[in-house]
Length: 355
Ligand SMILES: Nc1ncnc2c1ncn2[C@@H]1O[C@H](COP(=O)(O)OP(=O)(O)OP(=O)(O)O)[C@@H](O)[C@H]1O
Image 1 (cartoon, rainbow, N blue to C red):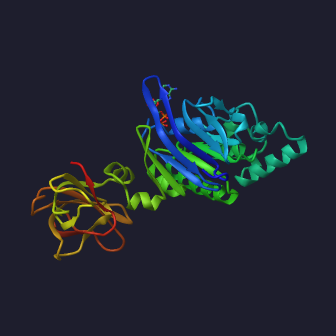
Image 2: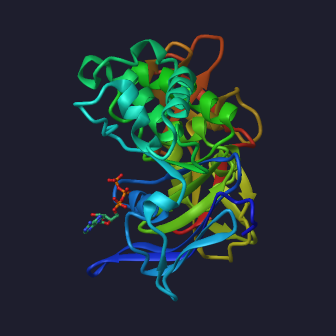
Image 3: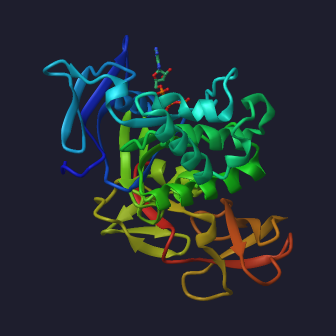
């Protein structure tokens, strides 16, 4: 923890009855950083966010903001949410239906003199491009506009930390992409530290400076998006970001035998069960070279900029296995029924322990 960290969770755990929803997590959000909490439904993301906001009493561990302890289970310290200087945006935006957009944004600014309050409302609405809607009521706004007002309302008091819980999931797919992009630009431009909860790996990779991937209350891996994507610590992490091909392999003399020749076993011992994990984009259609495996194309799905090709291995110990390849870039994909040679790239191929 440093004094400038916007948020630091120190070995925080949380139980709901017998269920351990959060299990010893350590999370840091540095000043100006956009951090995503990512994971499947029920893994404890929202609980971490609520604990950070002070909406849930801390049971175990400590929480600090800008070097100051705001929650400490050992001493019973639990700073009230309104004193933590956090801005919150929830999935449903939670705008007050009976208040105009301007009044919604002014809601958290009651401590300011009227003139300054108005100026802050204008500034916050301008930041999200909603100044023209100041006198509109929420029901007359689209989902995307409501999201922007919710963001303006959270930013207006100039919080030190923004907490966003699935803020885009109520929007339809096309709009979501645009709003994500606008939001990440706004967050970066305003320099506000942000912790964003999402179950969508693409969203996390797009938005985040760093990702914490959670499973069953624990942090499985933390790092920059490209680090987690290209250096996953286990098969769960690898498969969370894309469909992957998984093949059981055996370790012999520090190597695993694969359809594409031997690969380093990453420290796994002889005879230990191991798993070869290959991202679809790591499979190439290169022709008969060393390390290439013969296969038959069973299905081709054209996606425009890429094609998904399912091919079955026709030789070797893994004969009969179906692999999914993603071919991007120029050129025609192979045809159904075509005999092909598959090889693998350096990136996107992993060996993990376990069957
Ligand atoms: N108030 C509560 N009472 C009892 N159990 C709860 C409560 N809140 C959450 N849980 C349980 O704790 C676990 C973690 O929930 P949490 O909402 O933090 O997960 P999540 O990762 O945010 O999931 P989702 O994306 O579905 O919201 C889940 O099993 C959930 O059912």
